[in-house]
Length: 528
Image 1 (cartoon, rainbow, N blue to C red):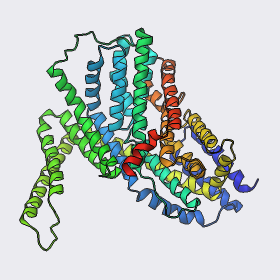
Image 2 (image 1 turned 90 degrees about the vertical axis):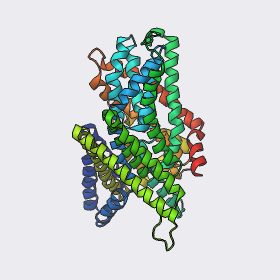
Image 3 (image 1 turned 60 degrees about the horizontal axis):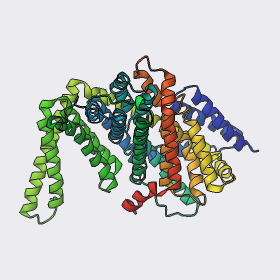
Image 4 (image 1 turned 180 degrees about the vertical axis):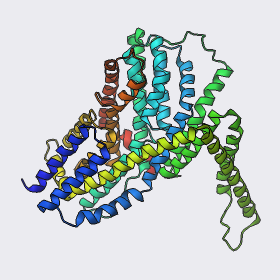
């Protein structure tokens, strides 16, 4: 065994040792990379100039100038704004009244709202905390089984990791795109075809909706098999399903749905990149937040939305290039209207931001966005240094050799990788697994015979990573729920409550293996 192999093994042991102590992930990755980079230079296992020359270029090209990563702070801001502006509360209240007279109805409404919040925020903590504060006391008061209530809320909150747009999918798209390009070059394909985040979003959409249906199916099964576990939380007639109620329901449901369609539809339709769509989502969230918190401001929000629709119509009707030699009068009129609508839109948006700032919401949202985004970027920088040293020591070749030597070929290697990721989810966060494990194993898996491509592999990994939020003892969704749950809810109740939902996710993973078209059909249809 040569010195490089020994250093690679020690890198893993040291990294996971520090991670399990709770030391910050970004510093653990960077520190481990620096430590073994120095050891490699001292022992001659590394080139004395390679790391120093490559690291700044890699950070600049792959992180600083990476347009896909610009979507992270935008999606984070969009999600935090929707959470702080109480839109989630309106959704839960309305859906709870709609299904409240049915057995298992509140559990079903929690799952549906979790899916809607997942598609509009993608932030697990915000969803779990909001539903835990609003729904859990009601479920317990009306006789819901403690374990079922806790498990339903925790599981529904994690749907933001598989239903696009999702922070996990953006990070996975970045890592897998690089891995796919590297795998193609290793296979002698130098005209590489990259994988886009939009393709991964499309691949995750149907499996995400299938998972929602399976969660709802479990709620229905429990309501039938054990009626005492999920009684109706409202008596029939307690809520009048009249015009006023449906007006309230539409008012709570339509705004986030429109935002979801605008963001996700523009990505899947090829109209906008994820970063551009995230910008639209952030602006939409600001307008919706202002309309929700300040009812007297809704007229300006409608003016802003009408201006935006008018701009889209004008852009599709007139040629707005004013640098041409001969500009028809109709195009000049269209250009003037576009300028006027742009000014109206900008004014309404700025007044929305100002009112949110004066009220204090904008400051809270901005601070949360900076804090979360800074953490992710710091981990990205640390992971870049770690992976650079790891690859220079020949770690990627060692991993490829190990995986190719496993019995069962591609499927045997995939099973081992998925099992390792599942077990690591008991101890590590999804970001740590994404940046430490995926870049190491993905190129080797994508080069093996029988590979179904990066999109299918990405969806499999995303659904597997979702379990890292639910698996005891360190699942983040469990911590979030524990922090807001009433004292009578024991930690063991939360742990036991999520077990059926973990089993459902395992079944969903098996279904993805048996029916890979669940993840590949929509990307092939939309993107060819």
